[in-house]
Image (tube, rainbow, N blue to C red; front, top):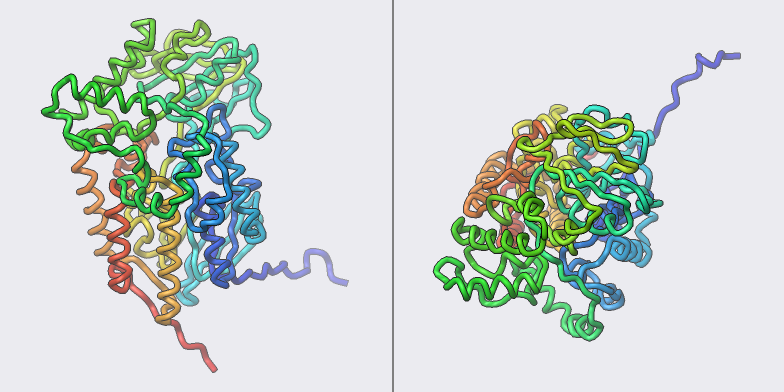
Length: 551
């Protein structure tokens, strides 16, 4: 009888599929739908317990979309968009998550998705021309294509502060909010960070907490959302012409907001009275279209300064304490960082239970977390709950968490050591049959994300159909095309005010991350270029034909 140790090692048989999709947010769900509908075998892996991506993880109080509900939704199926009823102009996280779950149910997507599972490693076999994909559950798959639908804002950023693991109370990040919530009633709450999630959460938390102390490193420009219930008649009117409505939005710079568009003059040269009247209209209208009222705000620093001064004046009007108002007032240009939309953010600082602490290098920097709170400068602050609203390792973080290895075993992290380089935000030299959805070098976070993901998925599917019809096994971005595309992205961004400040668009919120402007401004021009490239037999990509098998 053989001893236990003499038994042969168990062999894990690889599962063979046409495509592996990483992530089950809106991009991953649509990919699964398109791949399965075309008769291809697909496996999707998702770390969470259900679909939804960003809207699955970001459950913090006040989490809400900043694109109108009627636009922040799929348009690939008319029955779907006709049957779903939105309730608010800007939908909340729970409503968007219910929508994602409805889509998964309606198209029976979950049978292709493995939840509670991360893809840890994916290696390209240059002999077989296939990817070997390994999950944290030990499953191994071989796949012709790997498609990264990991999202642009999904890799949370927790600052490296001494003592993070010593705090005795709940310590949570807005991007990984507990599903059973956090009780703030009568609690002392500390919030570190005043980006979009912090600005949305702070007013809601302050309504029930005994006291909220906000630790701000950089003051932010934020515009009132002016959210409201969605008028059923307005919703019906949009649905009556949804196709034309969607097409008009696709020709907008960010693929949304056509119905708020008005003739836009230049700010420079306009009379102060006329400029102020238009800015006041935009402020009362609310939402991210605030910067679209003038043609030159995002290109001319002098025009941008006028808009920034208008918002600075609003802060002074709203916040009663002039010292607090001064701390909340941003310097520099408006819009070079993501423009935040809010509900009663500035007014919240008029509450007696809200304190603002400057933790910039000129204020009281945070030095350590303790068992009962945190130390900032010479002061120790005590809390029952500590929240980090410190954002994400945007656009590349989730891609680089997977050990992706292309030709010669080189990792994507090595290829991107000096910053992310792609062709169209879709492909990378040295990584055949690897596609990214809304990757660096595409409009991504500067556009309506659902529409941007649909455009990418449709392009990828058309490309796969083309490869099959031509007998191609492999597609790979050519080096010269990547170099030219990176130069193009830099050139387009350089004609705007975007690169003028340190933002997560450049990776400036992550210590040691290369400073590269990652998204491409201008959705319509990008779509036109993608279509032109496809029409020209996918110029800039190199193909390899199928290898004949031995008889």
